[in-house]
Length: 52
Picture 1 (cartoon, rainbow, N blue to C red):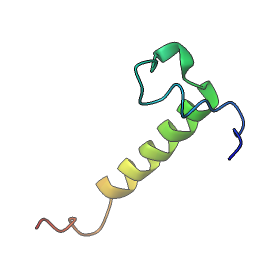
Picture 2 (picture 1 turned 90 degrees about the horizontal axis):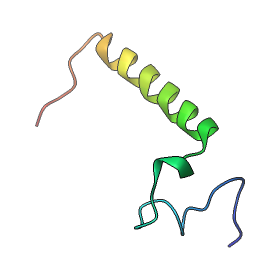
Picture 3 (picture 1 turned 120 degrees about the vertical axis):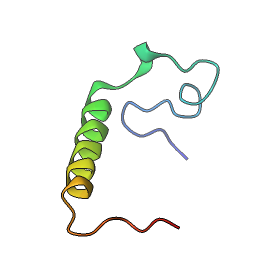
Picture 4 (picture 1 turned 60 degrees about the horizontal axis):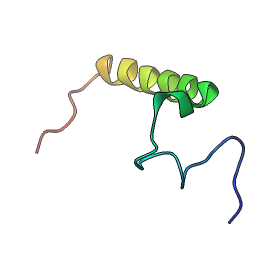
């Protein structure tokens, strides 16, 4: 399995080498946007989410 893009997933993320400096800005923007859209959609939903 080769590395994709700017990822160093096996070496950096979720290891003892995990640091803010290693974050890829494009990836941070993408996940931030996705989470914001999800949060707005859930907040504006017609019905409450089920709680079990």
